[in-house]
Image (cartoon, rainbow, N blue to C red; front, side, top):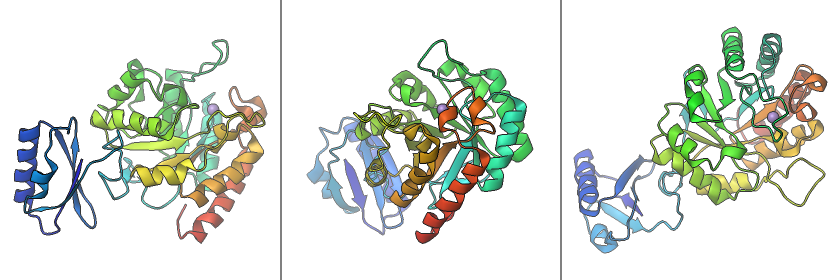
Length: 338
Ligand SMILES: [Mn+2]
């Protein structure tokens, strides 16, 4: 349920009102001070809440029941876009386009530092690199683990780029101290215990959509993280499984405007895993920016043919440079910075 308050509400009135509601109906309260209005969202079992009695209060403008099962991730609860600020001051979701780039997996110091420098020179703002890899086959390269995270930290020291890496289990968290954004991969999107655990962590979470999950299921997974206390969630569409076989997955570009409408959270696109094909990354990146995405996460390798993981979809630094040039053209048509 959402309660929109009148414009001239005083802080004390708001406090008294929310205390009254919490005590009377035993529900959680989420307050959002927007540009145009203050919205009080009620979370929990709101079946006993009397709409008419709340609507009759002097500070209340309107009361609405929210049909969607996700509340904190719902734009109705938080009309303004969520803007996430990293340690270095970089803002995500503020209307500019944020590009994350780097290798699928960290393989060596030379590799990750070289790629980090190259993508930074082309305009990437965040370095990606997998240390723990969720591979379909148990016999495929599983990632460098803790050593990989240390190499990412070295690349951060060399370039100043914040880093993002994927976590696969709660027990790995102590190793993620120097990681700026924690990624939850598509295969863990519905690992609810992991999501609840990450809700207690004080770092932004990039949550990838599962390859066979609906938009509502993605938002419910974001809700798990937010309900546990961490509201800094980035949603990432990375392709879904359809009947189409000519690409690794099918990029659901329509997820961008739909997610932006349903939720206030930043929305990213991963064109690399969506297509699995190097030459498709550029057009899909351009389409993502045109559709309103807040950012992109792109795989770049200094020698894709020798990559230990996802070489077929990894760009060379010069191909990445071309992507950046072209998405800047789209962004500037929309009056956005990259
Ligand atoms: Mn990959």
